[in-house]
Length: 394
Image (cartoon, rainbow, N blue to C red; front, side):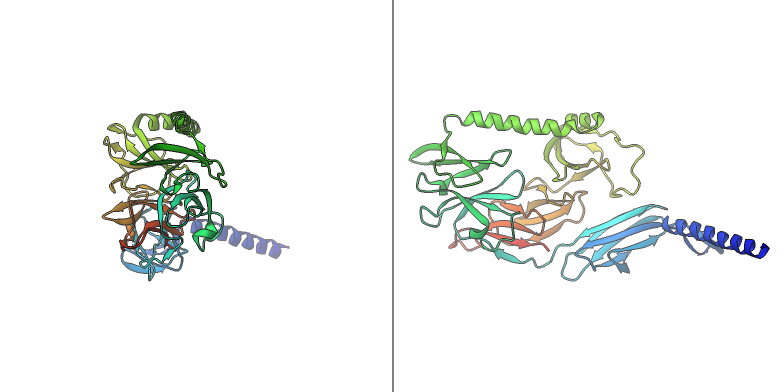
């Protein structure tokens, strides 16, 4: 009986010790030798991921592991570089804290993106809808019944040709819709088509976006009524969005932000500072394991910033505002500089030129899943009419 009790005590002891070791291991502690002593050392965890996966992970210049892996590091700040052949490298300084999981999440863009045509020649005036899933444009190189206004749905299915992915909603048999300027209603259900010329006054039509318009509605005389209503709808949507925030955050945004665009997931705000000010700390104590890129809470009026609502972090954006807008993943922004398309992270890091070929008038539309961009280009050939092309990013 005494022997059985002793065995039970020993088993219980080893189970208890094993449990403690596992808990310490999960928190980042590692057993080893240090400063002439044997024991547990306090470490932090770095989770390194990449899209696509299978990339190399360098820590302070040393190849350490591959992505989709966890690394134990002593507390400190490290330069993490993630690289995969055929893709631009990703690099960021990341602060490691004891018992804290930090993340290196790299989206890698190809160095030689694939360019594919998805339309006939003769495309003009493309416009992205508020949901960022459809593009309306005019076609002007075909017959009167083929010319007109089209809607390309990027979310419905893989697009092989424009004819298979687009729906014609107006033709040139009633008016020259192939020369129209197009704009969307805030709910994406209607499109305004404005047609004008040297020998005629402007005529404005209201088109339904979900099917062919047999008798387009002339709203020239009542255009301001629609515009006022749509502006009210935009303001109401903005008020509803702000109403869902805590009062101190709502006040901070209302007083200091001239909103340019909310991220697709509504967790970040791209804005111009409406006044010079210092942003108060909204989340206190600060979030452990948050983005360790240095932020800038002192605002200068007219400068561009991104505010991260979840982490209460604010980052200065120094890329200008030419075509500046969100990428679908809510982690990146796009902009145009020197006729090149660039994508960078919302904390102003990892600026990457993803396309440096010819394109027209800053017409750049991201595919809803972020797999490619849609551009309007004549490929630099003045003898060609513009066409829509995709630039592959994955």
